[in-house]
View 1 (spheres, rainbow, N blue to C red):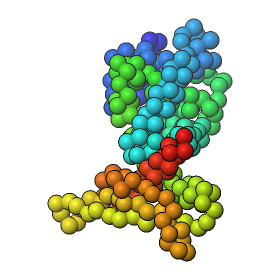
View 2 (view 1 turned 90 degrees about the vertical axis):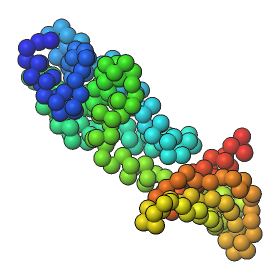
View 3 (view 1 turned 90 degrees about the horizontal axis):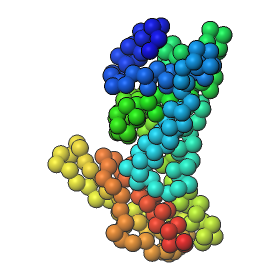
View 4 (view 1 turned 180 degrees about the horizontal axis):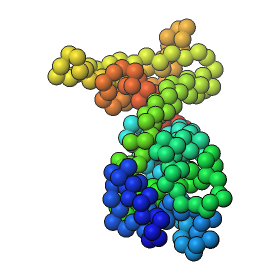
Amino acid sequence: MLAFMQEKVRKFQEFINYKFKNEQLLVQSLTTPSLSNEIGVTSYEFLETLGDAVIKIIFILKLYRIGITDSGEITKIKATLESDKALKNLAKKINLEKFIFTTESQRVKGTRILADVFEAICGALFLDSNCDLNLVEQIIIDPFYENLDNIIQDSIISSKNVLLEFLQEKFKTNIIIKLEYQKSGKFEHEPIWVARNPRILEKDSEKELIKIPRNLKSDKFSNKKDADKNLYAKILKHLKNKEK
């Protein structure tokens, strides 16, 4: 490691609260191709490609854990989370610009370089931790993606709209969805809600249009709204699978 890199490497590890076993991976993730060509060291390019894949897997698993398995929904949410704008904002939050190794003439602020370096850091953490996705998620994704849950929840809200559009296109009529709820929990102020027994009805006549398995229910949540969203996504998946 070159002497001018040592202090930045030390400070960055302190900042993310992780000590690299192989600090050269971190140096590589912070080094732009321009500087690489100038002084003959390895740039972030490979780690950026790896980190992009790692981020994709982490986001897909996050969505899977909350019941989102529809490929269309996953693609839509993932595109928002992985966009250049989202990654640049994340890099800005980390103040990544001050840690990057670049040439004196190269501009970093506001460029794609910030997103590239963030992806490369994810790749470096993945390799340094012996390919531990959970560690990457805990060290660099969860602490700085403060609005991650909001982005996901906003997209889940659309699951009801997507479900209604799907049903209205299928039956050519206005639809209402009725759910029942199961409440449990040891303490009254800490309820656990499960949405269940979904019924798909024509709005005017309340005639049941399609049978949904009675055993289809949401995961457990602390409020009805989140249980609803989760069950809407599951209903949509069930109906789409039936059409295959």
